Image (tube, rainbow, N blue to C red; front, side):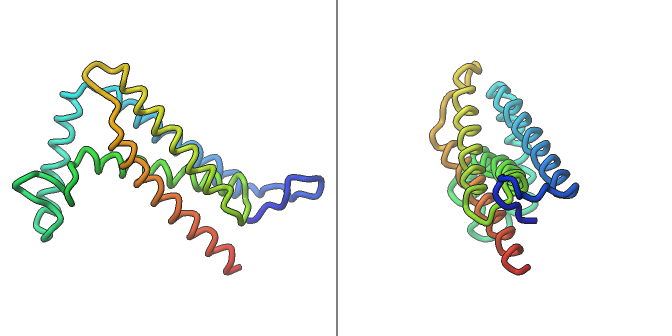
Length: 168
């Protein structure tokens, strides 16, 4: 699975490696487009969707002590809309990390750093895009929740893949 330097004697990626890179990259693009579409929604539509998800999560997980506070409506002290950022960007980070690792094929931290940089750039673009959507605004806390999502996903994905490589 590991590709050596891209010099003259570099091994060509296998068909499986090319498919994994293509699938992961395509999944990351689809998730990024979905995030862009969600960001383009008006605050009213976003609030309605968040309310539906909040009700669903309360019915499924609201019974766990300390997880949900019914007096404030917060999950671990944070609203459901902010947790949605962590989940969306976690999914994005997972596929970007997989694509970067498959494409770069190194045992170094370079693919992980590339994945973090790509996700951070997309997160910043998403927040700047909101400035042009009526009723939306740039929210630094959303950037932090995005970073939590993609940061955890990239670190876990890179750790799992590097552990698998070391075991070979």
